[in-house]
Amino acid sequence: MFQLYSKRNFSSLVGDTFTLLKLEGKNYFKNYFIINGGLLLVLCIVIYFFMQIFLKSAFLASSPNSSNAFLDTILSNVALFIFFGVALILLIMLASLVNYLYPVAYLKLLGENKQPSLNNLTSLIKGKIGRTIQFYLFSLFIIVPLLLVLLGLSFALVFVIIGVPILIILIPAYTCWISLSYYEYISTNSSYFNALKRGLKLLKSKFWPIIGSNYVMQSIVQIVLGIVVMVPYFIGIFTIFIDSDQTTQNSENVFSLLTILLTVIMIISILFNYTLQNIILINQGIIYYSLIEEQENISAKNNIDLIGQNEE
Image 1 (cartoon, helix red, strand yellow):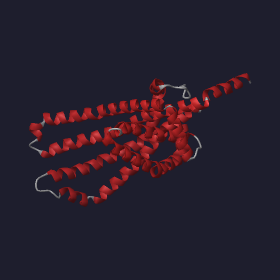
Image 2 (image 1 turned 120 degrees about the vertical axis):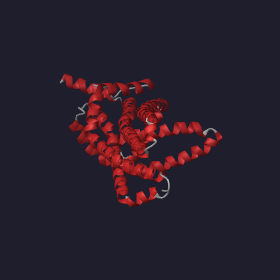
Image 3 (image 1 turned 180 degrees about the vertical axis):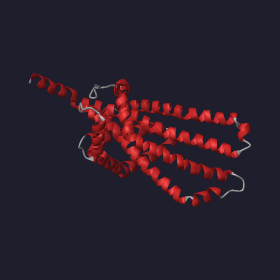
Image 4 (image 1 turned 90 degrees about the horizontal axis):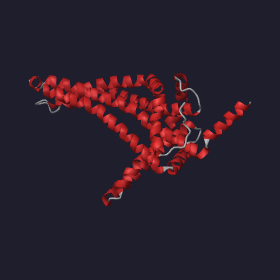
C-alpha cells in the first residue's frame, strides 16, 4: 500500500503523485467515474443541447439582413435558455463539489489504512458534503475578497515591474493555501478559521517546494489538456478546409460541421478538465500529508502502535 505519511522533498512531492496514481490509479478512477460519471454525462448532454441552440442563433445572426436574428432567437427560446442555463450552473456546482471532495476522501481512507472501496468512499463523501459546502461559502465571503485586494495591489505594482513576480508567486500560493486548508478542514474536525491558520502554517513551512510542485503539476495538466483539445480542433478545421469546395456552396453544411466541432471540443475539454484536476488535487494531498508527517511523525507513532499490537 502507498505510504501516505512520509517526509518528502520537491522531487518526491512530484514523483510520489505519479507513484500513487500508478499504484491506486485503476481503483481511484474506476470509483471516481462511478460516483461522478453520471453527473458529468448529464452535464455533457445539457451542454450539447445548449450549444445547438446557441450556435444556431449565432449562425442566423451572421446571415445577411438578420442583424436582430440572434436577439430574436434568444427571446423566442428564452425559457429554454433559462432552463439550460440553470441546469448548467447546478450540474457544474454538483460535479465540482464531488470532484473536489473525492480525492480528499480517497486519501483520508488511505491515511487511515482503510480500503478506499466504493462503499467507503460514498459514505465518507456523503458525510463531508455539508462541510465542503460550508468551506466554499465561507471562502466566497472571506478569502475571495482578500484575493481580489491582493490581485489589485499586484496589478498596480506591475507598472513598476515588481508586480510581475508577485503575481507569479501569489496565484499558486493562494491555491495551495486554500487546498491545504481544505484538506485540513475536511480531514479533521477543525473549525474554518483554524483550518486556514493551519493551512497557512503548512504552506510557510516548506513554501518553495510546495509552489514548485504546484507549478509542475499545473503545467503538466495544462499541456495534456491543450493537446487533447487542440488535436480534434485542428482535425476538424483541416476537414472543413479539405471539403471547402463542397461546403462553400451550402452554408448550412459549414454550420453543421462547425457546430459538431465546437460541441465536441467543449465536451472533451470539460471531461478532461474534471478528470485531470484529480492529479492536481492528489498532489495537494501528497503535500498535505507530507507536511503533517514532518510536524507530527504520524508514521512513527503508527509503527509503535503496531509493535505493541504484535507483542500482544
